[in-house]
Amino acid sequence: MTRDLSSEVIFKATRSTGPGGQNVNKVNTKVELRFDVEQSKILLDDEKLIILEKLKNRINKEGVLILTSDQSRSQLKNKVLVLELFHELILQALIVKKKRKTIKISLAAKKKRLEGKQRQSEKKILRKPPGL
Image 1 (cartoon, rainbow, N blue to C red):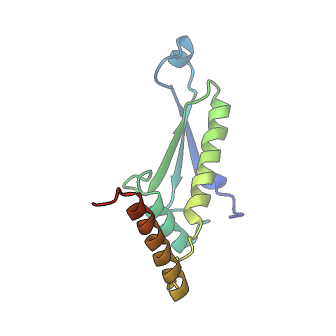
Image 2 (image 1 turned 30 degrees about the vertical axis):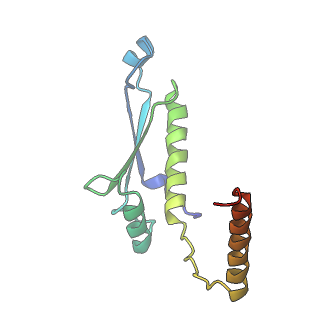
């Protein structure tokens, strides 16, 4: 996908949770990315449906894709990380999987498989002590 969706993305910075001392308590380093899939002007209607279906666990009831990042202590790094994640998710969602073709196994392949099973069976029979 060569279209740039960055113009339709909204960023919001908040305070991170967890350990980190004073930095966590006073600096807004956690970055939240919001992308309204349903209101997007760049995506086609069928692409919107695909994204809504494949990323339904990350999309809220209003049709907004929400991603967050608080891995780094830098707001800028978190913004870059969440943007990379966003682009990767959109690309993965829009990849169309090829249909699997069912094939019929040839008679020669069936015969070869059955002969191999028969040889294995004979090998195991020969391992048994005589008289059983």
